[in-house]
Length: 295
Image (tube, rainbow, N blue to C red; front, top):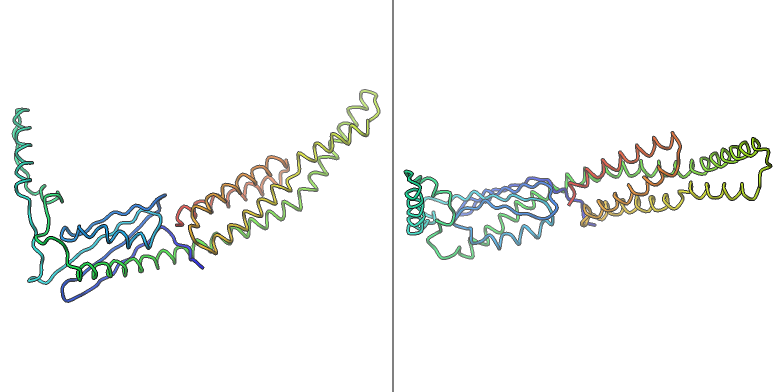
């Protein structure tokens, strides 16, 4: 069975080879879609599409930051190429702009260090052995990250299961209490109608009275709502057990639970039951907060 994954997690790894030392870090927070942000050395930026496929095989939602610190032995450090002609053209354009505005322009050469488009490595592409080593390092970091997300997912799942069990117990109490409330309200209606007719000097019409009581009883009937509510709560257990795409599915199921319990609360005017409905909605809200972090 799939396991629940939190969208929040942190992972890292250190991989040493004769050619380099890789220090990977992966951290993530919740998000509606998968968004990957990279901090890679300039020399391997060309590998980003390949590396992105590996991240996507490990995650489906959330904002994921992936960074790599790459160190080489002194004699193996790849050279960098600076696009000096492009940099010169940029500086000249800024010089011309300043001149047209009658302002003095002083070039800040340090700023050029932060423009990735001006830099590249001297080799055409990263060799396959290096690329495979980097893919392996990223996979190890992602496994570490996933383990942290699974641990957080287990904690969220345990918390939500206890809340669902509590709500199932309340749903049973609602089902037990509802018929008594219907009967109490029907009896009160009978008495009110009989009193009103007596004050007018009329005898109660049994068939009309039964009709009014039947309409009221139908209005106070929440059996269908409770059946659907129990079905939704059972589905939440299944989703927590299965784990696959649990976040979105649980979010939808919780909305359905809110709808049914709201209807129960509005249909049954009872103080004790109203408190239970409020508690029920509080538990649903806490579950919804937890679900925001599930993948």
